[in-house]
Image (cartoon, rainbow, N blue to C red; front, side, top):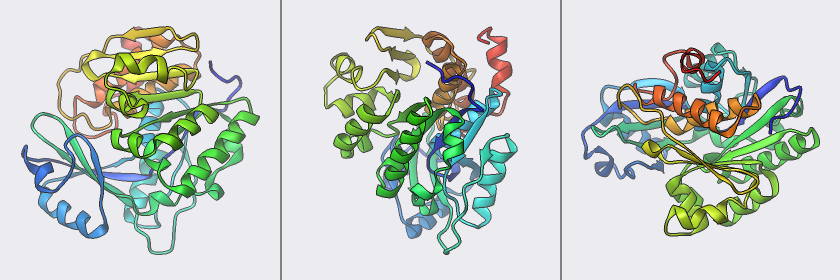
Length: 334
């Protein structure tokens, strides 16, 4: 299902966010009104309050789609990214991180005083991550930021669900989809969050059915999008939305529904240790899309994705600390 003769494997369009992570006690999410295992949008005042309470922190470039592109780059894939930062210190951190991995990132920063977005991530002793996000400049992606040459040169354009809620970014997504279609390229989207899937259900269903070739969702997101009670009931419905649907299930592995509605079940890759689940799904998507761009089988794509996710959850932070290319090569996957 790969597109031929592409200069880039995947270009992601998503929130340009800097992640601020901290190990916290088990009650921290509830104390600060952060949904356990989920995400809440906050304003700049809340961002300051929560950051002060987090105490010892680690700062790394993040953003869901950007994390996926970072995983792709660590696999020696050719990646691009479109996202909005501000002309400030955190914006420089974000740019330097992606560009330092060899990712093409040339979106013009905002200069109107809006600050670069940041995600405050509480990592509790059970390794669950709960997020409070100040979007800042990230939500200002517009049609003007879509680089037609970049989209046309990318085998796959990958959209981040978190950015889908904003009207202007959604218009940018549609513009990118039209360019991809005209260039015989593929598109993919990740649902990102269960509550987002509920809030945006009509818009997401329409967008997916009209514009996308590959959908990523975890089990809860898939159930929520289709308004069902369990995954078994969800599979026939969600499988008809797009040619390929990929459902991740944490330690249970993943399910891939192909264009013939066959379900491929692939086991998870166990991590060396369970430290922090931040970015695991992002890394899986990056690895899976790498396989798609290189025309690998669904099972091989899923195993590469699972290997990437296992590396990410073995340490703090959403970006790889080891060469993912070396790990998948050692595993005999490429």
